[in-house]
Image (cartoon, rainbow, N blue to C red; front, top):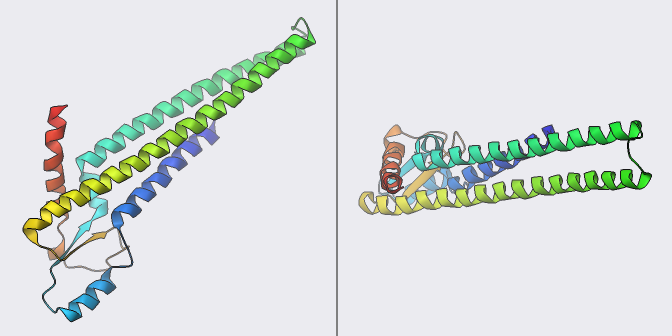
Amino acid sequence: MKRINYLVKGILAAAMIVMFAQCNGKKAETAETVETTAKVMPGGLKVAYVEIDTLLTKYNFWNDLNEMMMKKEENIRATLNQKARELDAEGKEFQRKVQNNAFVSRERAEQENARLVKKQQDLQELQTRLTNELQAENQKNSIQLRDSINSFLKVYNKKHGYNMIFSNTGFDNLLYADKAYNITKDIIDGLNERYAPSQKKK
């Protein structure tokens, strides 16, 4: 059963990495692009950055999605573990009967063995199906998250008029930036304010 747990956790971890990567956008266009553009337009470029790590920990929509996915992961793990325990118990009972010659015929023992083999195959298929469904939902959540942030930034930037807004995860994109260009709190507040009405409708 450790294999099942590792597989489910691995799928979730991989999906999370994809989410962060998609939110970060194109890494090639980072500080070097800003520096080059700034030389062409000295003092005329209006830029800002958003700390993605902070945004993801404080964006209520993302936190709700995370909580929902954790519950689904727990349900999948519980379902697979329960079925594996049942199969294990039936397998031990089968072995006990074989050792004690409890089957009325060899044919009956072969039928029971075939039933257990089929049950094991069904469990493996269920595991594959559930983990694939979980992965697909994580990918869907990734797209929703990205679209949610991007659509808000379009509205936000109509008022603020930035030429560029960079994403920053740890030290991946910006090695140094003046805190004056950090608009993370504004973005988080705006995203949460926009998300709140949809919560009240539920």
